[in-house]
Every structure is written in C-alpha cells, then in structure tokens.
Image (tube, rainbow, N blue to C red; front, side, top):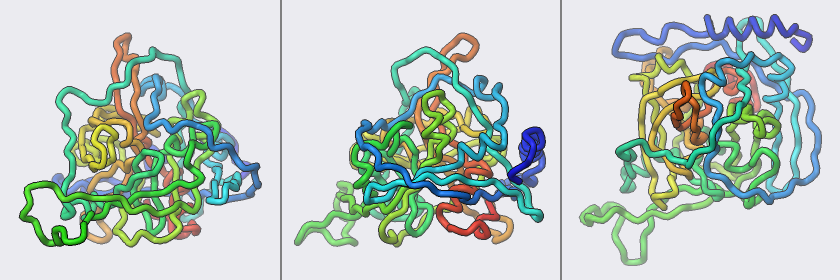
Length: 384
C-alpha cells in the first residue's frame, strides 16, 4: 500500500463515498446503521519527543470562517497527506510524549476510505453566538436521569470541556480542549475527568427519598488521565483551518470508570440520519454544574464536518454527537457517537453572514484510528 499512486488513492476515496455503504433503511420507519468497508490504520514508527510546555490557555470553542462551500471546493488529500494527518502525538501523565507515524492499509477482504482535506479561507470575524432564537437546551436534573444511559456517558474535563465515555477506560473529546494546535493547554499534564455523583450529607436525604421538590445535588468524582492521543492533522493544521477536521482526541483513564459507555460509529450522510437530526449533552459554562441536552437538524455537511444550529455554549465542546438507529445484525436499536462537537463558525453565504455550530464527523479513517487507539488490535475494528 505504501507505494500506491496518488491518483489511485483519490479514486479509492471516491469509490468509498459511492459504494462504501448499504441502503440505510430496512423499512421506512426503521433507519438502519449502514455497513461500511473500513481501512486499517496501524502504527509504523514511534519517536520520542522533548517534554512540552503546558502554557496555552484553554479555549472552550473553536471558531472558523471557512464554511461548507469553502471546504467542498478543496481537493481530496493524497495518500501521503492522509498518513501525515492521521499520525498522532501521545502525551503521558509523567509529561513525556511521543509521535507515531501510521500506515493506511486496505485488507483484501474489505475496503476503506480516507479523510477529505479541507483548506481554510479568510472571513469576517464576528462576535461569538451559539444560541439561535429561543434557547432549546434542556438541563438534566435528578440522579434517575443523570446516572442513567445515555446521559451518564457525558463527563467533564478539568480543562472545562465535555467528553464522552467510549470504552471501559477511554473518553472521546475535542483536541482543542487539551491542545491549541501548537502546545498543550494549562492543566493537561494533570488532566482529570469528572463523573457526576449524588451528593449526600450525613443525616441528609437517602438515595430513594424523592419527596423534595428541589433537584438532587450532585458532585463530580474525578479520575486522572493516563495518556492522551491527538492527531497530527490538528497539531500541524490548526493555523490554516485544516485542523478543524481533526479536532478530536482520545483520553485513557488510569482506572476503569465502571459505567455503561457509548460505542463510536462511522457517520452516515445527514440524509440517512433519523429525521436528519443529531443529539448531544454537555457541560455548557453558562449553566455551571448542569448537564445540558439538546437535539437539532443538520443544516449542511462536508466529508469531515456536520453543520447545525443546536444551541450550545463554550464548555459543551468535546461532547459526543450521537444518533439512534437500527442494528440489523443484532436486531436491536443502538445509539452510536458519530461526531464530536467542536465549536462555532461564521460563514459567508453568498455575501451574507451565516453562523453554524460545527461537529467533526467520524469518517472511516477516523473510526479506524480511534478504534485502534481503544482496542490496540485492528481485527476488532472491522465494523463501523
């Protein structure tokens, strides 16, 4: 695969978009998870790096002025570019870090795909606004909701963002929550993940006492992070907007969290989503201590990004964007994370400014990469 010509690689990407899925519907009322042909992303070499600085200020959202049309008009990456973007940096709790180069492979019994490269363009700087008309967010109260799936999969990062449980010891979040594209943000070396728990005082209400009209008070229980993975597409490309496509990171905890988690999945086209709608929950900073749920329609999409107008505020960045669809093999409904909420964009739409909130889609290559980070075995990453 290493010597594959660039033209052949581009043709392969186009074929993935055209035939890499099956019909999403087994019946009009039962939207079904598509079956994708997935590539394999494997480490090839690892290099030790100098210990980083941890001086960047945490930014709880990312703004960009390159919108859907700007991104749709850019060429697909070459094979070598895709390998560069999917190479990754690993930061360990002791402050050491490594850089890992990857190879992209296509198994003879299956196919795969690659990321669509989006280049940046200049645009007007606008005041950040992420609430569209009436605020449609719902604060989730009470342990019966907060401690149950799917809300229980949302966790808070000590840097101020949100993350989602995707395995026994792994949390998916946005890259900008821990790295600004040049260096790691303050507090990343001692990064912690917070889990909401009931807060009881001695002699206070019991766990089953629901007579009070006041919401039950909750507190965060924190677990330290063992290591983080950030794709080089974010680290190398943040200055020119390409990084927006790679604004995701995976955190490995020092110990299992013992909660039900949500699996990741390849993002279907927006027209195949149930009602064209997405869902996510996060810790918006204008509602301290509250988990905030929302859903909305997808307005537009590129190969790497979903554009929507879900109401959100900084702090929700890193939330797992999910949908619920029918799993044909197991004959059951299943929620999967298909993207990571990233931030806010003002876009020049035919000379008129339009703003969106943006989520990074989990494409076949991103799925292969994140799954390998979690499993450590590509054979466990053949189904997206």
